[in-house]
Every structure is written in C-alpha cells, then in structure tokens.
Length: 398
Image (tube, rainbow, N blue to C red; front, top):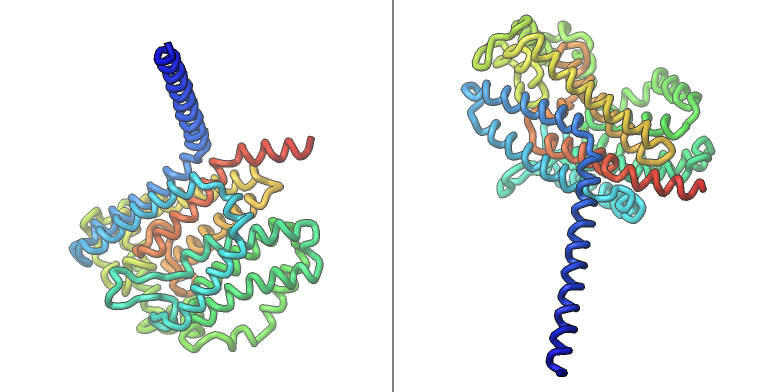
C-alpha cells in the first residue's frame, strides 16, 4: 500500500514538473516571438542590401585585388550579423543602467592603449602585430560604447542640460574620448564623434545658442587649425580644391571622380571598369567609386537610397522612444551613418577633404564592418525591448 501511494505521488510530481516545463518553454517561446516580432526588418533589409552590394563589388574587382578581400569581408559581415543578432536579445537598459561607468573606463583605456602601441599611416589608430590575423581599430567599436554612455549621462542631467555645471561634466565626458582620438591623429573619426555628440546634445534639449557660439568660435579661432598636423592641413586644402595638387594630395579624389563619371548611367558591368584601378586604397575608403563605375548611376543611387532608408527608420524609432535616453541612442546611431556616408561620398566626388572615413556596410575592413553591425545591434535591442519601456512609462505615469 505504501509502495502504491509513493508511486502515485511520484507520478503526480513528474506530471507537475512536465506542466512546468511546458509552461517555461511556452513563456520562453512567446518572449522570443515578441522580441523577433518587434525587430525592424526594414533596417535589416537595408543593411543586408548594402553588405551584399559591398561583396558583389569586391567580387567583381577580384581580378584586380585578389579574392582575399572578398573572403575577409564576407567573414566580417557574417560575424557582424551574428553579433547584431546577439545584441538585439540583450536589454539595452540593463547595460546602460548598470555598466555605463565600466564602459566609459574601458573606452578610455583602449583609446589610451592604442595611443601607446598603435600604428598607422599618419596616425596611431590601429592595433596590429605580425601574430594577429587581423588589425583592429578600437575607435570604430568605441562609437557604440560612447553612444550608450553619453546617452545615459544625458538622461542624468535631463532638465538641467543648459546649466554650466552639467555642460562642464558632459564636456569632460566627450572631451576625454574625442581628445584621445585627436591625439592619435585620426581626424576623420574625431569629426564623426563631434557630429554625433552635437546631435545627441541637441536631441537632449541643449540651447541653440550654445551651438551658434561654438560654431562662431571655431570659425574665428586659429588655434584649431594650428592643432592639425601638416598632412591633415594639406588634405583639407586639397579636399576642397583637389585641382590645386592633382599629382599628390588631390590625386585620390580626382581619380575617384573620374571612375564615377566613367560608369555613366548603367555602368561597365560586373567585371568591367579600369578607372577605379588608378585610385590608391580604392577598396576601402573609395569603394563607392568602384560601385559607381561597375554599376553606374543606378548602382550608386541604390546605395544612397538604402543608406537613406536606414537613417529614416532609425530616426522613426528615435521618435517612438521620445522621452527615453533610447531616443538619444537612436539619434547618435543615425548621426554616425549620416556623417560617415556624407563625408565618404563627398570625398569620392572630390567635394570634401579626404580624411579616411569608411562608407558604412560598404567599405572593406573588418573593424568598420563589425562595428557598423554592432551599431545596428544596439538599435535592434531598442526596437525589441520598446514594449517593456512603454509599459513601465505608462505604469509610472499612472
């Protein structure tokens, strides 16, 4: 009798456990379904389209550069996509609320380390050694960390952002990061950081008078110009007037412009094109010239449209999250894409200075590609967890 009773109790226990397991699986499945449902698939489509165009462009130029660049870009794209998928499942608020200080300290540490051991042509923004399979540019990845930490900082001074003490603290935060990048000699990245900082400050409510004052000060101050190195000054001058130095500083931009013009409306074809071969480092900062020559005006237009779609969707998410520091994060992410795309395409057209800025999801480079996907991972994390935020906001308002 005791044995039968024990058997019945054990059976009831296992049935209860089975019900709990089914419930846990169901809750897990529903949670994942909700997160997947809230992802912005238009953003994913735009990014995959740009990445695909990059791979097609590099594959078409394989006879000139070899297939190595294609395989490395494919591997970086795959790694970036996986990283984006993982980041989209992580609650951005948990990271920003608990780890902002740690992320800021890590950002300063790695930028300082790069300054000490970094290498590069005219700058010290890369970490590369013979035993490393790839070189790394920390400033690319730190953009994502900076957007998270600066957004959290803005949320802490919300309502008092125009107070001098708040501005001093925000300035110290931004200055520590941007200053280290400038000391490395990476003017292009520093300009991107300055632009995204300005956009985030504006979204947080900084008075327009501060922007006007900063612009006036920069326009009349010779100090900023004197801080630049000689090669940077020459690049800027030749960037706006490439014809003034067509055989040296203006050579890249002029050859890039010729390659774009050679593409016409329909391009020279997948394996066609010869003008882009005259552009030094064309597969990195000037990949837009290859795409334009091979696929013509319509190929270039496709790239620009996809970049615009990407920016618009991120700004739409920023508007949905208005009132939360997530809106500052989205604004910062959009600012990075706008700044890099405008500068890169502008220098390919010989209209802006050549400062070594990559075209997001297009230019060859592991650091640039993976970091760009990480930026989208942050945006998708905000999109996937936005229901949680609105529920909490409505509860607090009640």
